Amino acid sequence: MLDRTKRTVTLTEAGKYFLEEAKLSLEHAERAKAVARKVSRGELGTVRIGHVPSIPFSGLLTKLTSAFHRYAPDIHLEFVEGDPVDLLAGIMERGLDLGFFRLPHEDVPSEIAVQTVRKEKILLALRGDHWLAQKKKIKCADLGGENFILYYRRIGKSPQDGYRKAIAVVAAGSGVALVPESLHYMKVPSVVFRPLADIKLVSELAVAYRRDERSPAVSWFLADLSTGNFDRHK
Image (tube, rainbow, N blue to C red; front, side):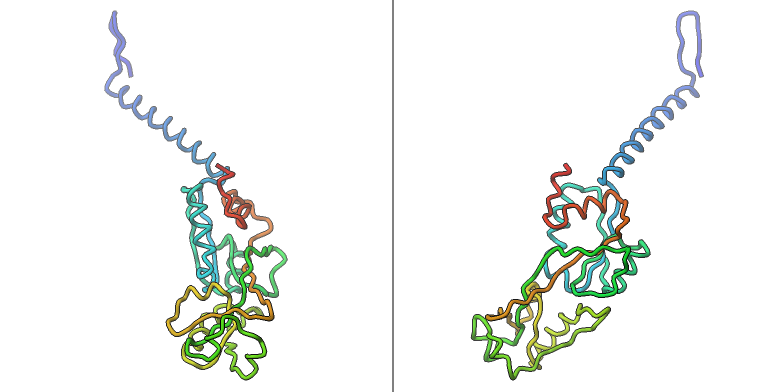
């Protein structure tokens, strides 16, 4: 490794390569330690998120993703669409970390916690040429003779993607439907949305997750889910 003379000591060619590799090994070790520290702090990794089809219209996922990426740019968020039964199964089998769906939902496994994260008003969806569309608010008494679209695919006794299907049927002129307020972002040309005047109905958006969750990244996401206040971890 070394060439020695009476006055100097120099590296041989093999020694030069060994030194370069040693430097690279130290750099790799430091990088590995830095990565391990980021993972332990929840600043690196993947969070796999499931959701029912109507959730993206609420803007909740967009808001959370934007806030989370701002303060945790090295965490990758994966999104999977599905029905509540599949989402809960995915969480139980650890293929998913979180799942967003609408309440009520029965038969949630005891190993899974469910937390309401947002409440939306229920609006009446109807065609723009319907006689009730001229009103700013709709009284229940005005709905006596209306044909309500109950096109909900009942999965686990919970109405989910049927909301979107109901609006499609409303657009066809086959009746009216009660849907979460965020569905107005679908902007179906022939459909308008009106609040109810004398009754308050809400749709609850909830997140499901494993009670024994140990992933720092997932725990971080859950800790600030309701406010999007991810900057406190910075």
